[in-house]
Image 1 (cartoon, rainbow, N blue to C red):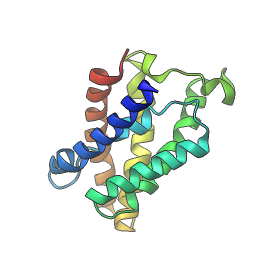
Image 2: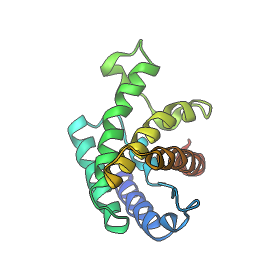
Image 3: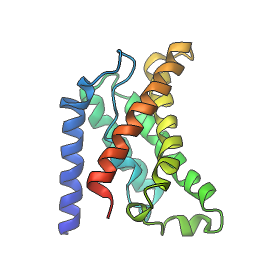
Image 4: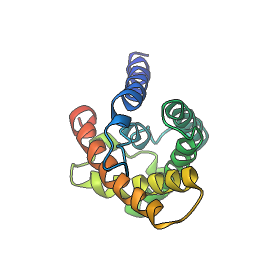
Length: 165
């Protein structure tokens, strides 16, 4: 119960920080860091996919209250959640689908984190950029790439400080 309270408090704190602080830290009006992605990336893998999708959809809608358009972040987080389990299965082919749910992400080595985080963050940033602009123009690709680098660096710092055990 105590761990659940800490987790819920961490989610609320990170979502408020995203809306109040991180959305104001823009990089040449191309990208702002999506620090709350660390919450979605480190959701326990023992959750069923249905609960995981509901959790990330709720997070995306909550972030959408601060950052417009409201549905783009929810769609991006759903894409991230769908892709993350498949990416872990690719990285750990000998575990299978059931074995992936047993991976303790917070115990991963620090060298493994960028390999685990980079593709899902890129999927998220690209999905949000396309959903927000409804096009595949060059600036959408540029926003997705800049957003990935910026969000990934912030997520790595947050995960090293707060999540690593």
